[in-house]
Image (cartoon, rainbow, N blue to C red):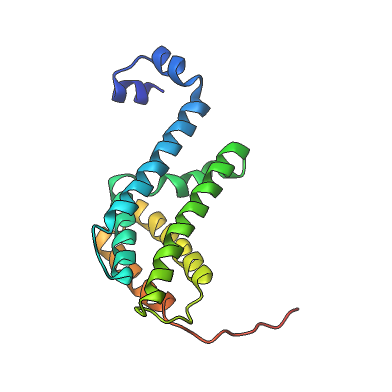
Length: 172
């Protein structure tokens, strides 16, 4: 709270009066972070007509946001709090669903424009992109450069968005 008071120029009492308690303040900060994330992703396309390139640009925007802080607040919160706080867990799941929906829209646009194969499974591709982004975020928090992360991300996109033969696994 003392760091927040110093950063905002407000007294602790004013922060408590506005938000009630530390938890409510954190929830507000988390929701603000998610809204800013979606605004940045939505605006990152910046008129790019090619949906595959727009997907890369949107994901690059995430990399840029990781650089500004210490990784991703969503990933850090999943690690630290989600298992112990029902409200935070619910907010994180809503964020993930909203992000997945946005990524799925871009993947489907790329399929419709024949920029990627219609055989790519959108849901699976989005899941793999999300998992990979979370891993990149963690590595960036521990020092990976944005350029290295961006290169790995683009390589992963090329792999994930290429159709592949489904392999059936034996049930044990």
